Length: 272
Ligand SMILES: NC(=O)c1ccc[n+]([C@@H]2O[C@H](COP(=O)([O-])OP(=O)(O)OC[C@H]3O[C@@H](n4cnc5c(N)ncnc54)[C@H](OP(=O)(O)O)[C@@H]3O)[C@@H](O)[C@H]2O)c1
Image (cartoon, rainbow, N blue to C red; front, side):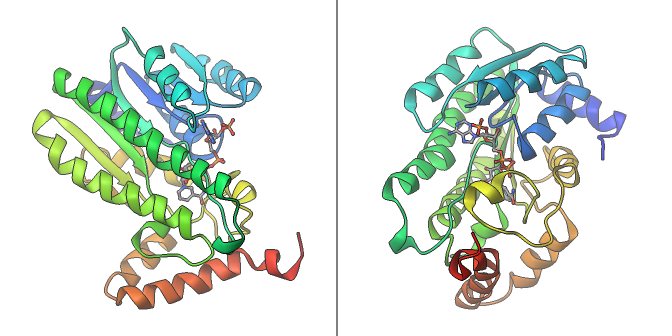
């Protein structure tokens, strides 16, 4: 799927010239960066793996745009600072807080270092980048911020407890900022996809059913910016989110327990 010419123009006029996309070397971030490049945005893209990011930068440049690659680990304060420094002097109008990852399994068996690292990437770096760019956008009286929330953000999720909690933080943070920043001409969007076929599953050690492809979610996320504050891309995700909305929270936790037990079954059956 691709953005219509009208959408490309709307996004570029409203949020150009430069967009920052964290975690742009694969999956959803790569798809969003690709769509933005086609819309004529110049891009500041980030990831940890240099070789892959530079390859992506090369591909994106074929759209006749400028691309700055920032190799930085966002679990590290120095990495976040490097990101911010790399945008100095550029007319940035759009921040996409995409970099993130999941963990799964029983919390009691988890590595604390890995779980704390997850919070640093999924929450702390997002907090710091959003603060820097919200200030910049307030001065400009224009801008957009997209947050990658998730279907797991709306209730506790057994076997992905810390990951789901990190996305609940993102969802809540984005919803509040959408209201706070509106008077300054800043649009905020929380995008909450269900399973998407990316490298996420492998890193989180989940085997996800009915996953969408990144190109099925990218366009609907970008097209929603400035029109609403929440988007749930994909039919299945909509059915799951809106279908569960009226249930008591405790019941939603039980349902998500079953879903996540399915995604992590291979861990218990020793198939991995
Ligand atoms: N896939 C899903 O089912 C799904 C569903 C809902 C929400 N989401 C959310 O969507 C976002 C993107 O995930 P994805 O599915 O596209 O995953 P992905 O394919 O694994 O892509 C993750 C991207 O983030 C980068 N990254 C990972 N850790 C980083 C770090 N410490 N510092 C900087 N960059 C880092 C990765 O590159 P390097 O490894 O080179 O750093 C990669 O570019 C995440 O926030 C995820 O929670 C995913």
